[in-house]
Image (cartoon, rainbow, N blue to C red; front, top):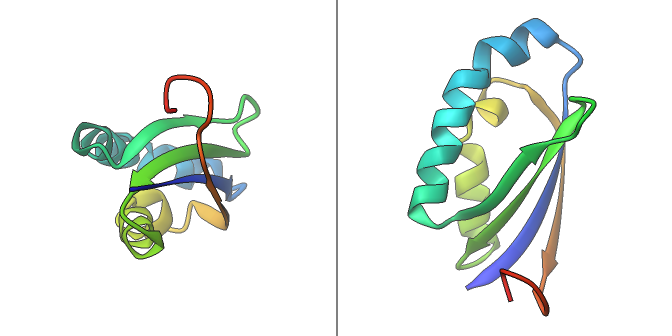
Length: 92
């Protein structure tokens, strides 16, 4: 399994964000229960969010991300992905 940190930037369309927030939250809860998403949360200013995923590889990560309503409905306008190796803390 591999860990990835995903940094999302959201659209400035707050109506769209509000419209999709419920389905997005439900989807992330499913992914947390499945073990693919380990940590998720928005930035304090609402401009984006961070996910930490534990998946087999980058292809599986892309599949998980593409299934998120925030991605499918255009809330996410920029995605940065960083593979990493937890050394200390709860994920190590």
